[in-house]
Image (cartoon, rainbow, N blue to C red; front, side, top):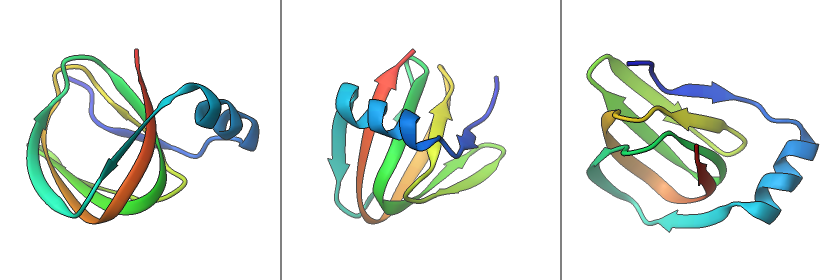
Length: 88
């Protein structure tokens, strides 16, 4: 299984995501999650560490993140997070 991928999108890509994708917010918390589909999200605000069996990834505003289908992980939301997302 592939792992979490982080990228930095262009401003044009960001504008399109903000218009077309759904929004999700979460207050500081820790929870288990499993992805039933590949999710691509853009972090608008907040901080989270996502832990997998192979390590951890720190995610912050400006990150474009891809979570592969089947990934099991633990989200540790450190600062209230707001993201836009879509499924692939």
